[in-house]
Length: 94
Image (cartoon, rainbow, N blue to C red):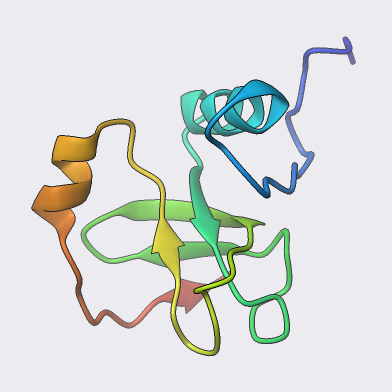
């Protein structure tokens, strides 16, 4: 495995706005796994999941506003974030 290969790895992103956090997010999403922020006391980091309307995701981020059964999905553009909005969905953990 090369140092740039993150396949089968989970990077925990605590601030994806700059630097290594953003690099990890972009690398994971290019591999097809959407980065999902979770409350790790509810969904352990590294958990793979399926979100209806979004697709596959991986619990690889946390956030101060993400508590309990709330999750936060990463989108590559602000427009896609607004289009998704706030939804109630039933996710499947894998």
